[in-house]
Image (cartoon, rainbow, N blue to C red):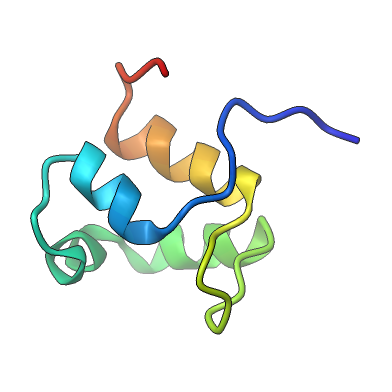
Amino acid sequence: MALYKYRACFMTDIAKRAGYNDVTLFQCCLTPDDWIEMIKLGWVPYRKKMNPPVVQYLMDKFVPGYDH
């Protein structure tokens, strides 16, 4: 089992950490390549929480200096 830096969480949690008040604005910042990478990492649109690899990808990209 792989160890990840972050736990599963909602996209709104990441948006708030990145400084966005609205998750819709945050989603507008995601490029098509970001969505493809998220799908490759196991993101499923109908699940509310994102799995740890997706969370780690987004946190590393949008909140690079964040450390628990």
